[in-house]
Length: 201
Length: 201
Image 1: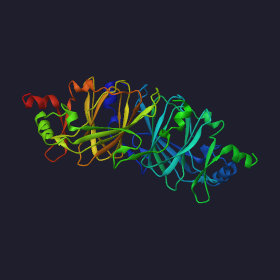
Image 2: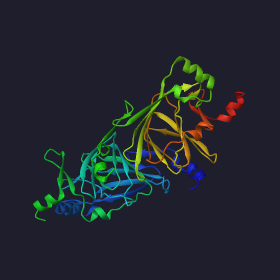
Image 3: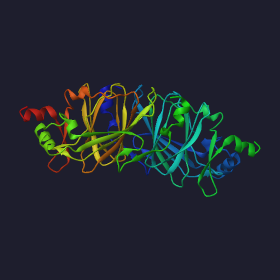
């Protein structure tokens, strides 16, 4: 893009965040339904049962990609619906950035949720994110959003244009941690491997 | 920063955006008063008069700089107070990024204002920004915030860690456009050179 065309483009005019409709006006929107999330949830029997009844929307991401140069940034508006598969809260697939050094700012706009974070050295944690909070995901850190509330969890992500998405590194083993609803509905973070052993898997 | 220390650092925990206080909790805050903005406003007599009475806070920026690598991002929370010098709305100094390719997303959180944008090829425009809107400032584009309302104008900026601030390229000639309050208080965008000619400067 030349300087002239980029400064004249639609991206510098007011981009509307329509939080109620869950879209970035002018953005490219993708949807992920329950059937797109096979092998993401720890309780595969509960997953199959849920899917035999219905294939609900789990999340959508509306993206704006105004440029693709080394210094450009992209923006995503995520809308993660409330719900569970068994006791596990609805989640996104999660990914590393293909360009491992790329970080990302998450900005909470509505609802209650958090991010499962882990790196290739085995560090892992769940970090809460609600409206008016910001989380920085450093480079080399896989990230998955989780909705722990009972309304849509809406957030912005800003990341380098050249970050890219690497889903494969996570899909092989899945995230090490699982966020479940405890007896009072509050989130409880569990170890996936321990849960699998307890289930005799 | 090693992967381990960055994932363990405070930056991945919920960073609070305190919009009422105008701070990023845990961030580094700078303040700019009227006396810091000499030569920014078109009406220098009005500037001198205003400064002889008082030296009010014009804006503050709270910054979070969680990393400095090629893929890292920085975050700034800007709070630009309402006010005028003569008929010209309060503004920030404005800058190019030292690394010209670096873009920036602005996210409106509160109040009513906009961004004066211009590039080194002579393209220029004023783009409105209010709560719930986003503006992308492409690379090689100088940007100055302007508060055209009567309450604080609050916004986030996200930019590459390596962007840097180049104030000098703007300070030499100032922005080509000026945002004034018209007779009804609504913003009017004028050409600085034309105004200076009309004033006999």
